[in-house]
Image (cartoon, rainbow, N blue to C red):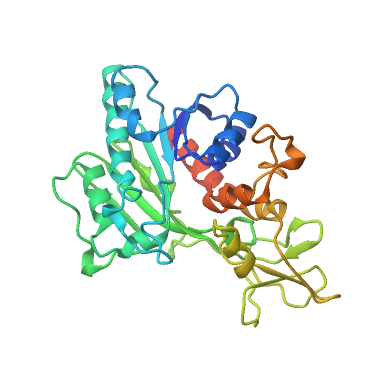
Length: 341
């Protein structure tokens, strides 16, 4: 059985994606009250360890187990082109380097116990490819075991790459959720790293038969995301704002990336029912479907109120902060194949 520990767990897109594959969560690490409530509701028997900055010491002292996989999407606000881009000088961005310390501790304990090195799976916004302080290079250098940051070839990090370091192999690739069966344009960088020296690690991210190293939309059929909404991935409309046309419309554009604030959801994802020209915002249920979650995953008892009284605002925030489930499942399947080979 493949085990994993999750940091910055949110509402656990990872567990929704990986538990059908037979992976087992050993622990979560989440601080935000509403996602913590979601975790407690759906996974009451998996400990939520809270602050990720405490994990290194707890792993080294044997208080918590060292899993086969460490997975997490550290806060993206400091790297996003939509924010102030404080990068590693922002304490949220600096959690990326804290993740390396946790990963090093896991590998240390696993080596002491005679187990193979762990695998890291990390997700973030593509904005980290272009920060002024070379945040990705700092992250790659730390993972690879180098004493200095790695520098991008020709001065710019690309959307996909591979590093063979003294300490670890590292691969990354920008993936777009729209090509994995959800009608949302959501580009995210996914990175894996491991000190395992077995061959084929790069195939977690890259298909040998693909010269373009890209996921194409050609094989994806029409996807129903809500009882009143459908879209066909890969098509674009001519509207001046991102719109989502209901069922019988001739244009079926994709929804733009779900953002975490409710205002962003209201302003950037507008639904136009072509029969009535009614305009409304996406519902939390529709946002769950756009991320690939089961219906009402975030509709939970909260703050001593029943599920039917669960407020929308924290649901929007948690869904927008999460990962697209089908993309994470694809990564998990590739890891599963790599470990079995």
